[in-house]
Image (tube, rainbow, N blue to C red; front, side, top):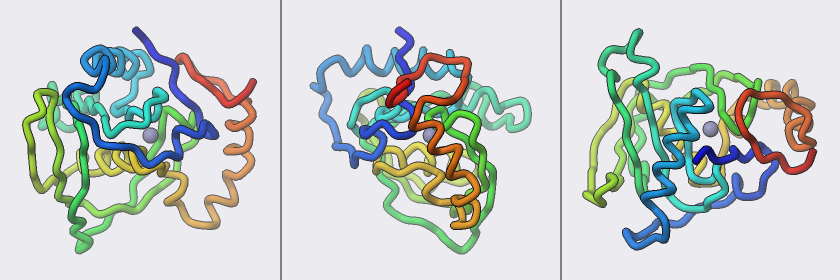
Length: 186
Ligand code: ZN
């Protein structure tokens, strides 16, 4: 089932989420629905708060980028209880980001290019890896959502000022996008 994507201004997007256990009710269905929702919205990552759930869960699909980045061919992963435990800040990179919860807003964000992440996969098997490449960027964006943060929190004060009216419009339901959403009001 395609779920509506919660739009900037929805309180759940500002919650610090909780780890889950394998007996979390309806987990398999939720993951299946998140995949369907991500495909429908043509995104590459979706975090549980974006579909209204305050739990530590995200899905990432980098296959759409594989034409330019062949290493991500068929790359589709579920991240349960992910935590970034180390940031290698020796190399930072500024790249443009967008977000399904922030239609039509694209801004440059500076982030480390190498991070150490712990998570569980769909079978609740633990992983602990240093991650590099574009995935690092997407993970930081998605896992920020699990801490109640969004990429617009990380743009420069000047840029933040410049997009202020766009952000306000989102909280008032004034936007257009091609997928199902759940604005604060409309
Ligand atoms: Zn996002």
